[in-house]
Length: 231
Image (cartoon, rainbow, N blue to C red; front, side, top):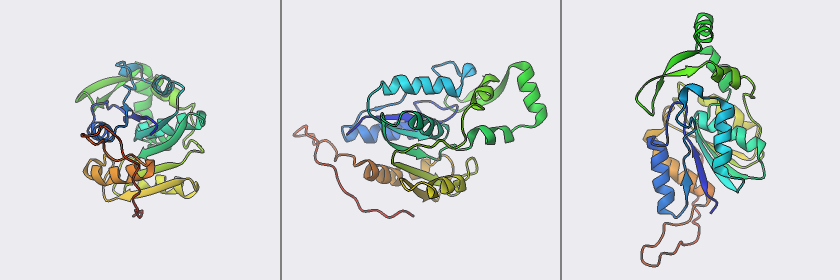
């Protein structure tokens, strides 16, 4: 099976619970998964352009499957739209489509002016559990990119019906216009951490993940086929 690159969400890290859960699951099935640090340890200098460059280095010009969570899902879609021959499939977890426009709605004109004047603003970094400064260049750069990237690859979108960060209706609308995109909704919120196991079933079926490695023979069995219905 093609290797997997996992893209964590905004102000998160490779140590997030979802990233580590899927890393363990893929490892049990003999599939390598890379989780790059999207801000490269320089959160204040974060941009969409910089994160796309990190993804490009992680993919390394070789075939890959992208899994992205929230902003990572938006980045996965952006990258796939620009590299259709490299990315085979996508799995998007509550993808932050319409990110540039929706982010602006979070702040008042006064907040924007202060952020621009001071050059950075405090945001909570979930990966570090503390506030960090984020440079104004983050939004200046994000404005260069489309709200809903168009990519030709098959995709699976997993979204929580109770998501109050990125409404599930955004993913529903996106998937309804794209025959190669499958949408599965869960009774969950934005984090989706309470539905990790059912998400893995959907993902392993979509990607035809091999059966787990036989510890006796050190041999990977044939891909399984699971019949599932989308709720």
